[in-house]
Length: 485
Ligand code: BGC
Image (cartoon, rainbow, N blue to C red; front, side, top):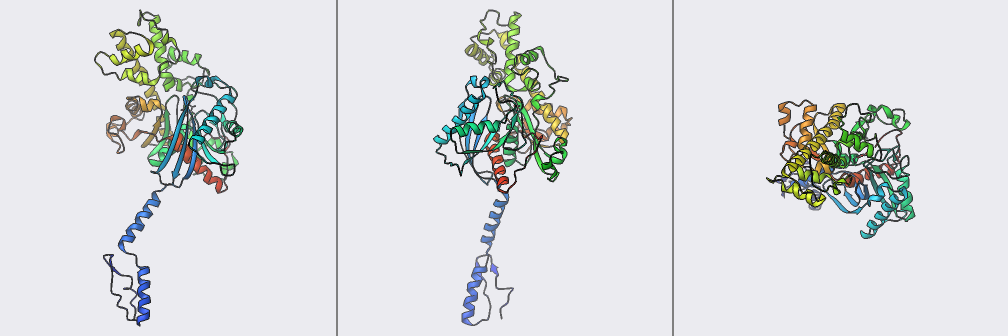
């Protein structure tokens, strides 16, 4: 008789138990073969379980993508291989310089430059694409755009000092497609993505605690996720009505344009002048007080004013300092962060950049000024994030931030975190909460902390392109009228 309870038994997963099956020889041999085939020992069980876990932790996005980031100073092109496993990616990238004239030139010049850079990258990296099997492109376009579909975006207004004729009111994807087809590039544009959305998606890919994607760089802005049922302005769309109201959607706040009516912003005469002299006066009111493009310019204008009033640089030739936008965030950070007893780092910076020899008083003044402007900027940057947290009822999590101010200004995170706690009325206990993923400094204290975003314009754009392609392959190509990103 065969005792079915015994046949698959193992001792310590290594040796088979005596079957104890009383069978004729032929049949017993057959049974032993079966027994071998059907036995799953402990080692195998562990191996299967490990693999199971790995699959559970795997992302679904796979494939090769091109990404393009039209930033303020450079044009970055990447080739990214997503392997489905979040921790495992391959990236090749190249940055192409954007000549300054492009920023105030014509649309055709901009798109030709973009398409030529893509072409150079495809050739250098020997990437293969054909008309039938094109390379798929995720395009990070970090300017306010209305998107009815993920693969188009109508530019509302240029920001960050750009003023290129013939793009506002137009679909940037169509313009880029035309330039790519003029060069016969085997590329299909799949997704247009804002940098904040890219930062949020790329960071969520690695860090499930991500609640917001933010950019504190040349410009400023943030994105968060909401359920479509909570977004009044898209409810009339038939596509939205066909979806479950709990479907998540990325919301690009475009909060650089917050308070364009100037009801509450603490504007100084210097801010007013910068706005008046900018290509789009009256627009991006909040951004002009807090983003990297403007911090150095505020500083420069104050120095010029102090000089005009005979308070600093009395005997110096300040011609070089008169050049608009000649001070960037890293200059400001270096001056503020100068720890030399006689402030010789700042003295050297001023000498080498502007040919100005400074007195000890001037050095102390310009350092204190750098601190003042950067502190105001960081504190204002906390107001937008606090508003999103309150609006969404978010009381803990990670704000994944990218951009030159967040990454290069050594005190930004700390000041931002302190201000966020002031707005959100954190108790002493809240403030002492240390985030386990933190680097241990004060910026990582409190229930909501600023983390460094993963590569939003590269990985984020590639992941969004992968998700879009997957939806297209499943036959969905829904668009949403009136939505942002
Ligand atoms: C743009 C946003 C962008 C932000 C950060 C702003 O000027 O309007 O779309 O996200 O800069 O780059």
